[in-house]
Length: 96
Image (tube, rainbow, N blue to C red; front, side):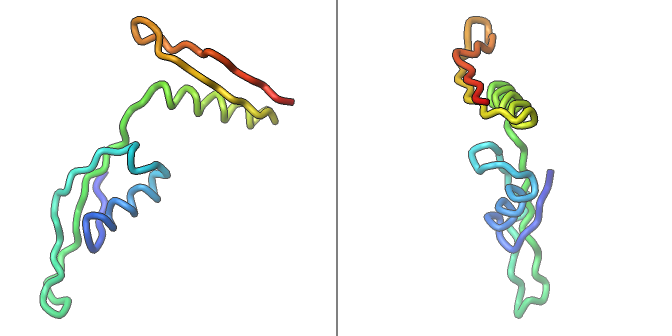
């Protein structure tokens, strides 16, 4: 998705807020650096392309935690990535 701001960094901050993700969870590409113009005349916004990184392990853990919360449980999940990229849940602690 493309986002605009006065500077590339402000455009990235707006993207992170809208997508509700952290900086380390996205890849960014500056499409247009933007310019201030002269006395604001001819100013152009910065445009950045922001792509959320796909992390199946993180997505699975967050899903399980959200399901626990929906059931009124506190869930702590620890994982390892097993052979052939199989996700193994080492420990799931359910607190009532």
